[in-house]
Amino acid sequence: MSKIAVLGYGVVGSGVVELFYKNKESILKKIGKDADIKYILDIRDFPDSPYRDKFTRDINDIVNDKEVTIVAECMGGATFAYDFVKACLQNGKNVSTSNKELVAKKGAELLAIAKEKNCNFFFEASVGGAIPIIRPLHKCLAANEISQIAGILNGTTNFILGKMINESMDFDAALKMAQELGYAEKDPTADVEGHDACRKICILSSLITGKHIYPDNVYTKGITDISLKDVKLAEKFGAAVKLIASVRKLENGRIIPMVMPMLVPYDNLMSRVDDVFNAVMVCGDGIDKAMFYGRGAGMLPTASAVLGDVIEQLKNEENGTDLAQSWVDCDNSEILADYKENECRMYFRVSGISEADLENAEIIDNGEEVAFVTARMSIAKSDEFAKSVELRGGSVKSKIAVLDI
Ligand code: HSE
Image (cartoon, rainbow, N blue to C red):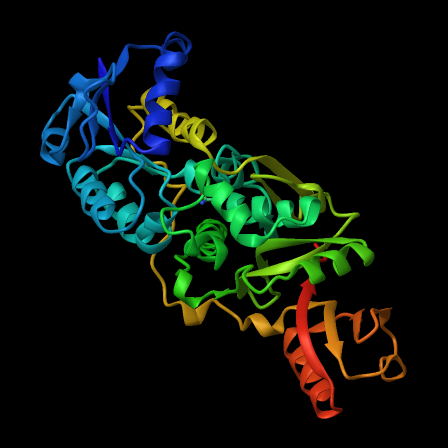
């Protein structure tokens, strides 16, 4: 019988255990053999849990148990989770993780260990929660050259922006709700400052290039500067403000990954992605565009993706490492281009400048301030334009790129 260990009994880990036992009969049929959860690792006690006999505080119980072939890591963070996952892989155990921080920071190293030990480091749950995107990208879409990916990859910020757009709720109240619903990271800074979305676009970028893209090298801006005023003005321009994580491949082979709030025009399906839902749009030379949509965070949606990897592994235990789901370490300066080369239209809200000075722009005059959307230009040029507004005595209150995937 194959034995499973679950690391961490928080929102995701408890969801993995719950979903496994809820659907155990059908899961075992799909695997084609018997399997069970043998261990749950957590430093806390759960004396009333029906699974209390499975708890351990010692990772060595798992690492040294030959019966355990697959470990579901749901602890989060890149400290203890890194040590434990590394120890499991080094002992030939397969790992399925929901931990995007771990994959984005240590993916190349952990994938290399998995390859050396002929086992797998799977991470479908690390991007997009319930949405299948990792396996589709490197399997179903493998025939394509992927030119661009853009997505709403953080449920918490999408939830917050949705509350601001639809209910005029303030930022702090919406964040508190997201935390109570179990969507937000332990430290919500990672959500609202865009770091979580950055880790996810790094994972997708690494997957399509085969080279590890590190979060520290990716331009990242969160939603903390987004005001209700901009959200409402965006509506007048026929767009919704969303936190967009994207990567674009240039003709010279370099890529530009980045994370920033953007105006998503209503004719783009992503403008309608509300609540904690995520969406990922992929452009390839064979498919044109494909969009993946679903719950991007939460207990059972994320557990579904973790268990999907566990089942995949248990069904294919004889196959060894899946090399298609892999990448290698690289010097990022050799593959990244400056995000300011990216071209798009740009929304501005300015004061102290008259409409007459703004040729070729769609304009909304709001009294003291003027909001407008420029023609397409590079981000570098839009910075120059902002400076020229200031030189003419104006003041730039906000500047948000418009998505054009
Ligand atoms: N905090 C993350 C989010 C959880 O809100 O999307 C899922 O990765």
